[in-house]
Image (cartoon, rainbow, N blue to C red; front, side):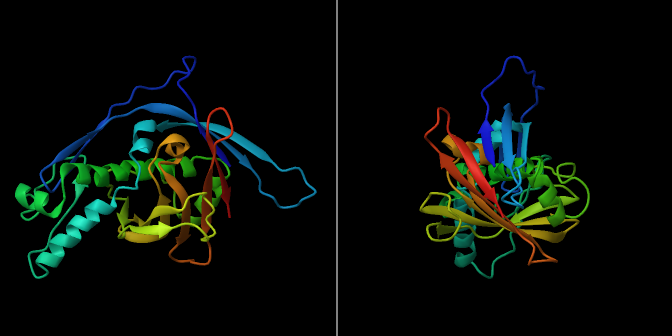
Amino acid sequence: MILDLLEDDPDKKQKDVDGSICYTTTGRSFGFSAENTFLRSTIHGPFSNPDETVPVRKGELTVNRANLGIGLHRVSGFFKALQILRERNPDGPRMRYSASQDPVPEDPVLSDPELLEDIGLTPEVERAFVGSLPALLEFFGVVYETDGLKDILKQLIPGRSVLGMLNPFGSRTIGFSYGNPQPYRIEESGLGAGLEAVTAIPVELQMKEKTVLVATLYAVDPVGPWEACAGVVALKVHPVKDPDKSLVIRFMEISHIARPKLIGSVF
């Protein structure tokens, strides 16, 4: 599999889209821009018989490049700040953090500006976390809308089109929740992304408040060719009801060609 973000093509008209605003229970709001561009995908396989011609599927899809460029690798700071707060006052009032495209009530604890600065939950740290949500959806959108991968992912996720239900800042039908991100030494792990250290991010996909998919994303700064996949260098995913059925996607940078691309393998 090869992913290639294309430069703007004046012959191809793209729909103008508005950016989005996210409101959180800290009382802050964050704006995110929209920058539509084209992503070309090429899938070689499946490799079922070495004597047969390997099928090749090509396609183009429209992605929000601004979302891909946010990435997922900086979410650790958000969880670290909340952990500091819990350790300071383990018996304190329960915090309620949420983010939405509609204004939300402020949380009595998390809306204290001095407290937020003291525990390190700065506007920059919170923006990195909130922005990771549209980045995550953009990444899964690339996977789900890529011929070849779509068929595999449909076997793992029940129901109708995932993208038809997704909302970057929360949906009554579908949503994401994060586990605590951890530094991860990717060498000798079998992921083969050509990197030494990344951030491992546990993610659960929930439908109607039930977890249906468990995944771990391995992410880096989404610069250069890594922008095409929101900085996700590898993905391991399996459904809750059938943990023996899984999907692994591995990306590796190709730097010896005129414009760097990403090549990946699916297992």
